[in-house]
Length: 200
Image (cartoon, rainbow, N blue to C red; front, side):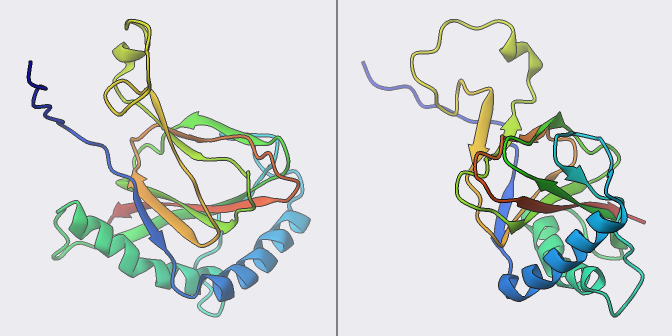
């Protein structure tokens, strides 16, 4: 018997870039993020379990590292819109919010989405070895509840898929996509800057 022709419909995208000049940006971003942590040590509790979640960055100071980082991100955001073939002409595409999460050993982020955002992103300021994969959950909830025993995981039967990350990696994906970050098993901090993108 011949193997069947398999058609895959409705793929869900995660676009992965390596930020240009990431070493320089990360040095200054680390300083800014640790300073924020000193000023707001309690942080916020959102998807993080353990770790520290910053308040939103102030993006209006044109001399700040976070403003310069936002400018740097513009071409990656535009490229993502173009890759997904979303309309960009006469559209005011903006970063709505940006924040950081510092996860120490054994800290992680539970599954969540970013509602009211066309795109969301995770940028790795610090990503030591074994710091935890970025993970996507299958949008088809029905598949999680009724399926036979899986012999071998593949793209046709997976409920969770993961991406290995390194410092300087920028992941951009639709805000509706359920995602989480696995436990940091290293002895060093994992530092991620996240942001949401919308159209004004």
